[in-house]
Length: 407
Image (cartoon, rainbow, N blue to C red; front, top):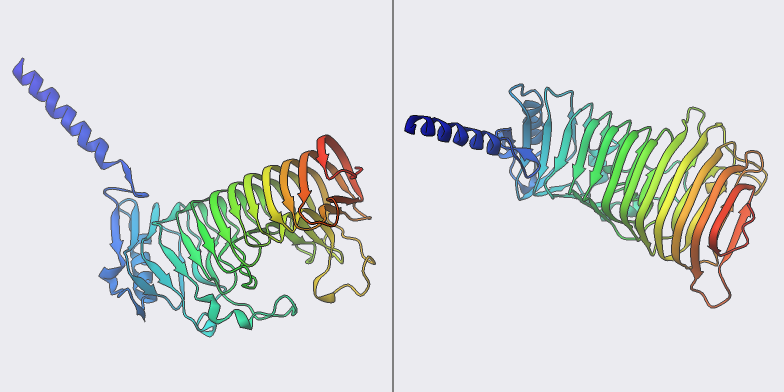
């Protein structure tokens, strides 16, 4: 009896330790092979270029075949001139940043589109609560993209291209030279707990830019920047956005679309349970008036969005034509078809009188646009909020303020 009891105790103890050893902790699993960048010569003194050391640690972790691997960047300031971390990797890989990664002040030292770039990786997790400092204030004066269509391209803080089944959790990004996060051709990708910060007057510092990607979730993020909080470009499908705190910035924008011949449709966007505070725009769809591609924007849902002193809370602009590219206002009609877009429970305050402004294409009028439970108040003293709807077909349900949109 005693021997049987002893065997049972030993078996239970073995099962307990087996369970504990496989429990997730801090975003990775105990027993993973950890590749500490300090073991590869990284200094973390904020002066020495640690790009080579981090690249070596990544390459070893990526090719580790004994199980999952973790690249670990500890506390400290790690200066990086630029870095590209490529796959494919042999197993799940985690990139933990607990310290600060600092970019060069001189934009000429970065020769690629993104300062930090991940490419061709599956099952990647970037986490740790660390900071990406783009040192953008030293180069913002060089950015004249608001006036010059051939403006100089500056580096984005971090980019992900051809990355699948992956996530970013708890990362912080400040003062990018241009955008903060750039996602191109990613699939099944989650972004959560991210904080993005740049001054409201910093040019073209988009928070999260997405193109030709699918099956993405963005939730519980805070974005305060000088351009779009989230910019959604062509070819993006099945994107779910929730619990976003946006402002300052230019809101959540789809487009601009229609400028290039090879563009793809944008389909399946949900934005819900979010707050826009002090942004120039709220929910915006913009397409080139002088478009060269015939694509569609469809199956959108905007639900439960609060606007706090937002310049243009709801905007569809199919007469978008920056830099004077249209020789005559109103001469061109966009060829981008917008259909099946639902706005429900959008409420708060507008700093412009036209709180609801939908100017769709005469050639391809908007179809199946649904407005329900809209309550937007103008906080100026020269009248009430107004609504402008042109070439819009659809339906209206519930109380709509401002009224006057006949669709």
